[in-house]
Image (cartoon, rainbow, N blue to C red; front, side, top):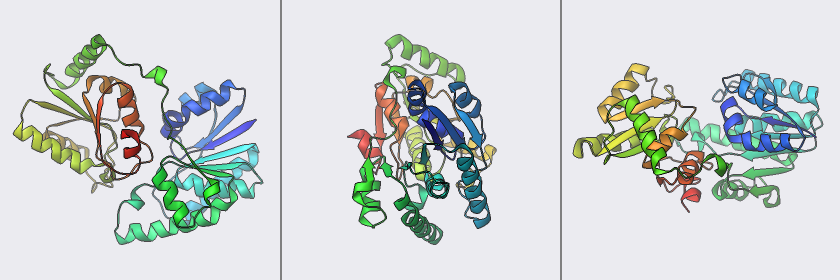
Length: 326
């Protein structure tokens, strides 16, 4: 069987869809991915995936770019003629599902991995784009076999608004992780991880609580809330806490912050900004607590990883996060 998986970023394809891909390959199926070009493409290729790269623009609402995206998806699907097309995230879900329909693919599926910032912000632009997105879903989703939701709140939102029939919606428990890759660390492994952290950021006292914020630097992930809390605790309890932030900064959504401004903000708040880390596990091992003050999630993998490693988690009581805590 030939399976085509479509996702707008190569990192999400490799990290979040990797276990599914490996299972399909192990069962003897052929897996193709359509995603953007990036550093994870060679890793996907090494797994045995046939990768086709096209230009995805996650935030663009330009009709010309979206028409171009639809044409690229249609061309690739038409060329490969897969037995199954599985689309992840908003743009692939809409344009990929429509392209699969027009290409004559009968087994097309969509996974809603979370609703994103459009369903968090209530400014006029977000409200307009939200309604446009829901209208597109209303038009496209009847053409797919099933729609998978990673949390019950998103499923209820779609069904209650008549966007999708209940029997076409399938609740899942999120992407999950392979627990064999996240065994509980020994005390020696934790000490080693903290020693490595000390080499990177400076002294890490044995009695200091290490608090990790493993998320992109965007408002809807709780970026401002984390940095404000870190500033408060650093000022009122100096030396008691060590704050780490691992994740890319989305400078556009934060008012076009420069790298220098990010560094200055982190220093003023007592936060060690680590940037993007492909190996987040070593920082999880060094941490005592993982925090995610997010406004809305699908199901956050970072919190699942932290729990698997026996770490305490602190999260917002919002869709996606509450499922992990429960």
